[in-house]
Image 1 (cartoon, rainbow, N blue to C red):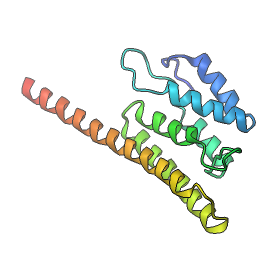
Image 2 (tube, rainbow, N blue to C red; image 1 turned 30 degrees about the horizontal axis):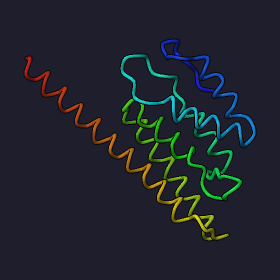
Image 3 (tube, rainbow, N blue to C red; image 1 turned 90 degrees about the horizontal axis):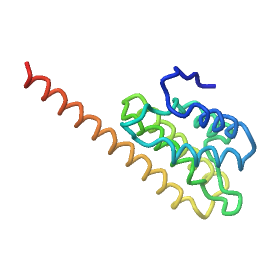
Image 4 (cartoon, rainbow, N blue to C red; image 1 turned 135 degrees about the horizontal axis):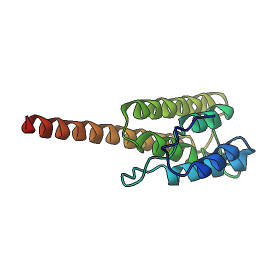
Amino acid sequence: MTETTGAESFPELFGVIQDYAQGDHNHQVKALRVISAAYLPLFEVPPMPDAKKVVEDVLRANDFLLTDPETGGLEPAAVDAVVSVATSRLDPEDLKWGAGCLLDVMDALRRRAQTEGYETYVLDADDVLDGLESILAADIVEDAIEDVIEDALEGEV
């Protein structure tokens, strides 16, 4: 489990998310959906506890291919949760982690297509690529913010 430092917001919600993430498929999907909605860049409140381990544990438990049992396609919450956690703090390490997770998902999609083949491969791969695009955009924004802050600090000196 991920340790909290006490400065994070909503530790009780994070505890529920952790419990759900260790449950059955439906609980795991619900945990990822809550993470997707709760981990947004909010600058007026302290950040939520770090959920990278929770998200990655759910993905690993499903060999990075969490699927919707009804459609057989990739569960959108898997991509959404990675993107939300990766971009919520605009931290370069979080962004790198998110890109790595989505590349693992893409690799799992590729393996499945090679061994089984499946109808929604192109749609699922497109969702993962959209997630990678969001992380890349956040990385560009993070760099731009750093440049503006640097310029502002240099102007004060």
